[in-house]
Image (cartoon, rainbow, N blue to C red; front, side, top):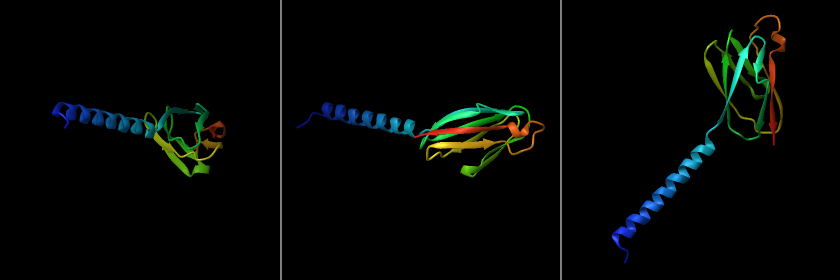
Length: 121
């Protein structure tokens, strides 16, 4: 027979191990957050390296104007209000280059306001 102290110890070990496993799984499933700044007439960074299948959230902040953020190949679009952070979850599933751009006309130079998601395998 096992003593009550030994049972308590065994339960403690099992509970601690389970808690550690749950914490690891939660961290593994948390998306990577990448901060992006939008201002006339650029996104910074303009090139964002990603890995295929990685969960990513872009935290995009406009400094000066209501810009748009559009990723046509992924069917994503958002308005970027000045002074606010807009969170955009990206689902890059395969390697390649995916373009993003401002789709709210923001003045001369608007056509230059674009960037790339560089998705590696």
